[in-house]
Image (tube, rainbow, N blue to C red; front, side, top):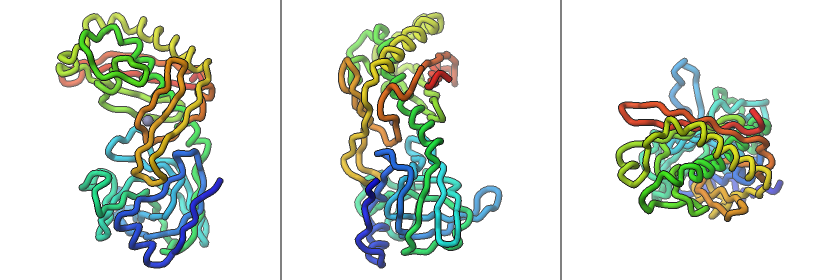
Length: 311
Ligand SMILES: [Zn+2]
């Protein structure tokens, strides 16, 4: 494991980090530990239970933060090893600042890439004793939990491609296509995606605008068992093919654009993604989906639950 070394730990580094330089992140390449320099410790409002909280900002982080903009993959579990002992990271979130105030999660008032703003990994702790600016600390991520979530995330992307394939015949008009040239139902209808250990739950809204784009929902409920079977057959074939997975990144910082790239036999697929992943499809093991159709506020909602590793 090679980690970028900070060039300086004086006030310049702090000023840089809080006014335009995003956190360097090493979790996309699979790292689960790093040494970081503490750039800033911000006291936060206590949580709902009255527990005090602080946000610890490091120059570099191997801890995956939840992104309030698209919270599909949650926070890693991690511990900060500091001079005085261990400080559990109770949450890890994307934060942003223009150098005056730290904004966390959904309170961030600007888009990523806004000039003058830095986007940062905020390690939330309920005990910041022994953590001071300029300190060098060790960040250690729970590797077993990370691996389980990474497998779930790769399974989520793969299942979405298999779902697109199974639903391709329901499109009557030209529409956007995925990396395999199939109509991209996933991107057109996705409402929410939640990735957990060894699996994911994705919901799709089959609303009027989707139907106007040419997607036919007629008889879908009765077809669910056949669709599941078709998706599971595609997934079995792809997992057996053991295609490599990699993350392509425009750069090493939190907001640099990253993509999940998988070299399937039918073609190489690239999907924008800020998460963590397996290195090849065989790691997923038996991957299966279950589909259900419900209704929310009068709109049909398709839910796909994906499980990897034969779970
Ligand atoms: Zn993703």
